[in-house]
Image 1 (cartoon, one colour):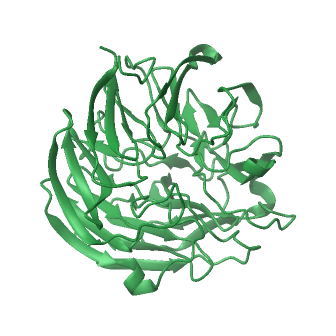
Image 2 (cartoon, one colour; image 1 turned 135 degrees about the horizontal axis):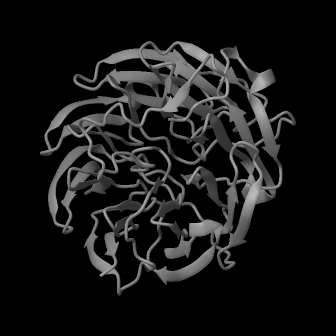
Length: 424
């Protein structure tokens, strides 16, 4: 449990609300069962190389989403013959089925696709979202249970760099966030029927592109009730998960009104502090904020615990392990921080290269896995608060999705293949 120092409000990550349906061996959403990008223990490989490759399976088209694993089945989104699709694979890499949807909207960025959003599952259904606007629920046998189109209902989004946010699950709903230059909102859809349960405006005035959001909401528990913590448009907000009502808001992330600062990296929470990466680390203007999650209403004046202007990340989201926050910055610098104070515990770097890191890192068994955009995958030891690069291997294709560590295996989606690695 992540407990706040304030005795009035207790905020926890909702890591157990779907525990009855998903097992401890599952990775049911983008950053894993605890939204930390990490797992404890396990014998994970020191390299992702031909020597540790168990299998690789060709994919039918380009997608940048991260796979999920539920009940010994891997699910990922990809285009099939120009149409959005959800694919299911067993743990030997054999494709089990595919569910086909509408025409793909492939996007325009070299690292974008129509399949940027990662699936999410409650163990009974898989929920998917595509740039085309398709939001759908699919059974574990591949049957489409319901589908709706967000673009047809609410218009096209105006995001400059395609889309990025993934759907999340509460106990009753699948929730989407739309944050762009236009009508922005959170909306909840019934997991069983797809009917919209509520839709709440989330509009803030920002400098150019500051209202463009790619981060994924977090489902948290606030005094025993589910809430949605959402980062974007230069504000961190909490909404009641049942009704969409705004409970809490924090601003003042861009007091100098900098332009072209979209929200990309998803926050992490440690012991009641949310760590928010903002700014443009890729342009020498990093910002890293520590935000206390106590209080109610507008907490802008009281919630800012600390600010770093010398460290941050633009695209990759942080990982949490052993109560510390781990960043891989866009140029390959690695930093371990104490979340309550923002203090750097240690920092190091992967070898310099002109290519950036877009994938978000994961930590498993004390191993830190960080793919670079061009397909070079680094593994480092971070156990004992020490950093040592163990290996670097070229997968020979771009990698944008994040690795997923489950039961001693690392699954990784490249532009053309799905890979599985393990210590042999």
